[in-house]
Image (tube, rainbow, N blue to C red; front, side, top):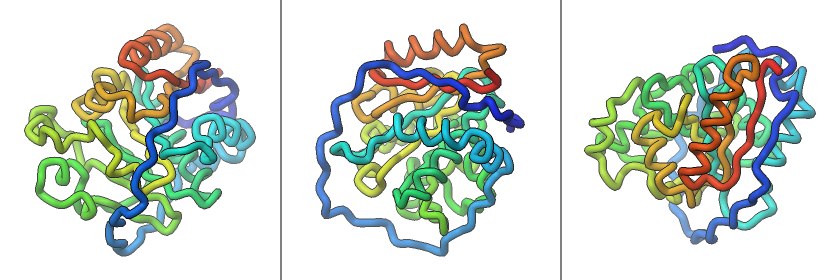
Length: 247
């Protein structure tokens, strides 16, 4: 993972179009049984980011999710290349929202090189790829933590052909997850518009996404990230944020 500097969230911009709120969901939802909660081993990069850019992070977190609005919040975080700080930003935002008493779910949607659970120091007995392919139920794939943050992690790289066999079990309608959490964040990997079947299915039904976040290294990938934003817009994502690392 990239060693972040203090300029990680020095600047960001967002699209001016705000999405319509999700339709309200039934309140009678069965919550997965809580298993032994694990302790997150927060990466030093998260601690550094909170210490050096805490104000900017709080402003970004408030822009991304307004918990006063009707409906759940689904975020899609991506980037152009690996090592730009995408997962670090995701974990740090989750910690910020958790400190506010919000129930957050982080979903690893990077089929090529999943690292969400590893970065958080968590042990995954069953990945949510196992749930998608029917080996376990979805509730068995949840990893609960003492911080109030839940994870749906992939245990390792997943071939696209394997997930395609799951058909309707892919998260084209992740309302099942959204009913149980204040915020659901998908760590989609770099170049998410072509990162794999999970990201493709989410972008194929952008009505479930409230916003997309593109993390970039402004020294090297400014043009590529602008192109990626255009691809997300063409895919139907109406609201996006551009977060600059190493500005």
